[in-house]
Length: 182
Image 1 (cartoon, rainbow, N blue to C red):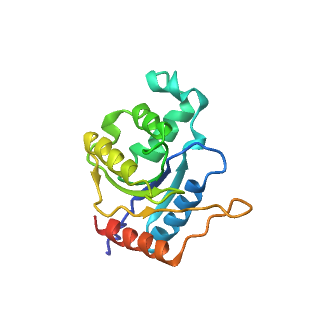
Image 2 (image 1 turned 90 degrees about the vertical axis):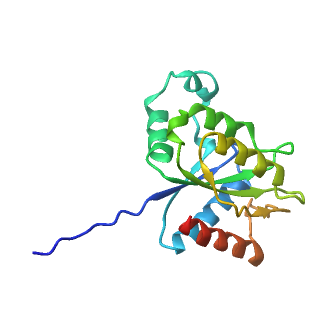
Image 3 (image 1 turned 135 degrees about the vertical axis):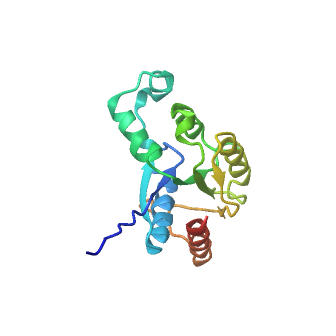
């Protein structure tokens, strides 16, 4: 009699770190997720545009809706790895991302792993935001991959399409390779 061993591949949640409508960050999150999928990894993308509108007042303070509880379970609690894609807002990362982190009970983050990607229209690629989020995640006991691509001068073309250069695509492929072994 042969035993069949099923190996379950874990899911990686990509979190698009803004709730701005028609943002470039969500497109980059999807493009990055594709590079991870090429490595045979299971990915899902969560846009903070999908947060419940009442997240700042009721969801944050324990009045959980069943829909948000399901989101927390499927996008955070049942996942071991995350990739945060962070646009630069005022020299850091968006407040909505901090609000999301605060709305999820800290124990759901403990011992998990994360990779970060910085995005900006300017020259820095959100380096300060990457450092700041690294500190917040370390506080939540999340292990953060050392390799953090900073994608600068990201522009949306007519029709809101974002095109990544070959150099940026290679940075994201390298991160996918490193994160696979992390």
